[in-house]
Length: 177
Image 1 (tube, rainbow, N blue to C red):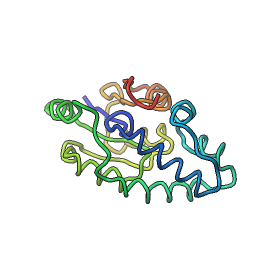
Image 2 (image 1 turned 30 degrees about the vertical axis):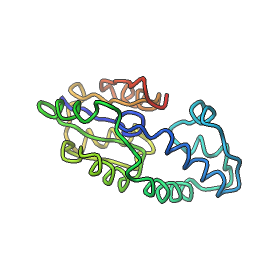
Image 3 (image 1 turned 120 degrees about the vertical axis):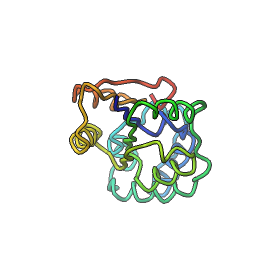
């Protein structure tokens, strides 16, 4: 079986980090900060849909650049959800594991090494703003059999991406959505 994981909200508990960085972005680009509840209720993927509401005249590239710089500074504060390292070790025994995330590859690479799970993944893909396209590219590049693949995420966009491509989907109920 091929198991593709989202990172934020699925493997990593980075809600507070992302909310803090979001507020830094909003302030930096002249917007007002938002409460954690507002962030939880309104944050969506692709992120440009979220940020266009709060920073309508700022390019998503400028926002991404600022986000990456700030996220990297949090580094070791990002933790995996309880039980994830053991789950990954167990699943790796008979499966091929992948990460597919909207986070920048540099962040994913650093965090997967810091958390000790880097070596369990066959491929780590970042910058997947459109997960349908990114998942399809992963499936094709790795010659994965669609019916033998599951994409596990925590947001509607993750589940919708899997369904659109007719791969199995799994939803983490403890994540962002």
